[in-house]
Length: 486
Image (cartoon, rainbow, N blue to C red):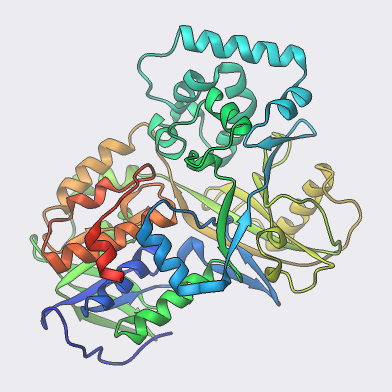
C-alpha cells in the first residue's frame, strides 16, 4: 500500500504537510478528512497491515476479527462515511450474545424470564433485596467500578454478572478499576433500565443494549482498506512497515520524525503531527528527551493485552450467538466469537465453523509466552469443558497476539493523563487521537471522530483541546466535520 508519489495537490496551504503516526481507524480517519480538504498527509504504520486492533486476519480462506467489532454510531458523519465506502457490502446484522455462567446460558441483554429461570427463585429474591438495599443505602462517593456497578445493580448481581468477568478481562480487582471505565462504557444502564429495555423496545437504546449493528461483508479490514484506497486516490500517502523511532522537537513545536523503513532510517519533516501511538511510546521516542517527571507518569499507564486463537471446527452449527461472554472462573477464555454469525462470507465452507477464543493477558506473562500449539490445545480443551464441542476435528488454527489492546483505567491513570496532557499541549502542532493515543477506551466511531476533528483543527487553525471532549458517551455533531467528508 506504500505510495511513493510526491502527493502534489492544490493544498489549503502549500506549506502544510501533516504526518500521522499510526494507521488504525483514528489515523485513517484523519488522512481521509485531510484529503477532502486537499491537505497533504502521510500516514506511518510500523506493521504491514492497516486497521490496528480493528483489522481483519486470515487463516487460509477464512477471515476473522480481533475481538468482534460492531459498526454502530449515532453520529451522522461517521455513518455516512461507512455507508459511502462500502455500499451494499455494509451488512445489517442482528445481535445475539449470551453470558455463560455455571453451565447455563443467560441472554444478554438480560431478559427477566430467562434470568429468573436460570437463577432460581431464591437467588432472584436475594438479587432483588440486594438491589433495593443499594438504592436505599448507595455508596455516595463512587470511585471504583465495584461501587459504581453495585449502586446500579446491587451487590448480589454485581458478584454474579460483573465481578468474575471484569477481573478476568482486566487482570486486577474491580476495587482497583476506576469508576470512570463503567461511567464511560455503560453510562445510563441500571437493573431497571435493562429490564425495561427487554420488555419495551426503545428506539433510543443504551449503546450497551443495542440489538442490531452493521458489519462489513468480509470483516472490518474491508472498511479500512476502502478508506485507505480512497485517501490515496485523493493524494494521501500511507507507508506501511515504517516504524517511528524518533520524534524531534524544539520544546514548542514538533519538527520531524525518524522512521525505520526498508532497512534504512529516514528523517521526514512536517508542519503538523497527529499521533495515535501509545502515549508512553510517543514520549519515550521524543528527542531531546522529555523531563523525567513526565516519563514517570507515562510509565504508570497500564495496558491489557489480548490473544485471539482462531479455530476451524468440522461442524456446521455450534451456537447461534455472535459472541458469548464466559463468566466461568474455571476456564481462562474470556469471550468466544462465532465468525460465521457475524457474516457468512467470513467462512467459505458453510459446513465448518470458525471460532475466536479470546484470552486477556499481560505481555510477557505465562499465557502470552505460550507456544502457539499449546494455546491451541488449551482453547480446544476449554471448548470441550464448556460443552460447546465434543469430538469435532480442529482443522486449522491461528494465534494472533495484540499488545496494548486496552488502556486500563486504574486508580491513578487520570492524574497521570492530566500531567501528560498539560505537557504535550505545549507543542502547538501536535494532537493526540485514538484509543492508545489518548489512553481512552473509545469505540471505533469515537476514535474516528478524534482523527476527523484533529484534521479540522489543522484546517481551521484551532487548538486541540476540543478532542478531549469526544468520548464514549458523546453524540458528537460537528458541522465542519460533516463538510470535510461531504
